[in-house]
Image (cartoon, rainbow, N blue to C red; front, side):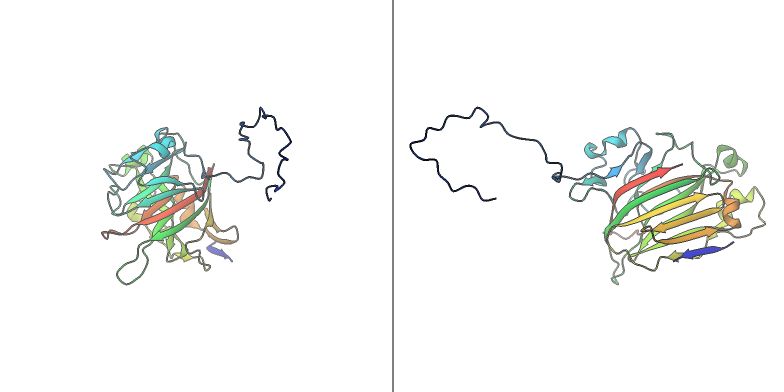
Length: 293
């Protein structure tokens, strides 16, 4: 099976001068109770960070893991790049071209799922399944000299080699390709997946990054612009589904994804700016983010 697309005025009455008004013992007591219908003065994002670490566009690049990430609102190292906007209840991810990870040339302020807080070693397979839901927006992203906006990756499913697989193919790290990358691209949501260059590849060669290439990307037809939108990613054995705003759906279900089952995986979410141009930047806001397995 291939790709499936679904488409009160204060009283003016004065106290008579002949009336003696006694001091009210409760006069100076302030009522600080809040009405059930009264809006709070600030809003906070609905995001539990206990199973996420964040990579920053500075340092080696720098990372902040659980439990330290839980104090992000007072963490001086994080504040320029990851902070609350209490006016709309969002968690802001700001990034610019800076430090990058060994397997990339671009910088990011991006969360990486950690099923065991503080560790990258425990991950999930497509047969075990995973689901990530988020509500987000991209209120700002730089433009190039021609007035075209840059793009940024807002969600991913990234592959990972086990230690045994790493040693088998002689790699020096556990990196495997990202099987899913979701971009904000010129106001639209664009989905990129991987496919095998050769479906008859050997079991060992299947583990190498070079065995995989980009499949044809898919852009959801309805633009999101800078407005708030929702995304849901569902991974099951041999299948990926991406749902935009609970209505539009992209499904990939084929032999390539069946063979992808050899890899461990983890979710990523945030702001991975595809630019190395000086002076460029992007802001991504997450209002909700949750993962299930």
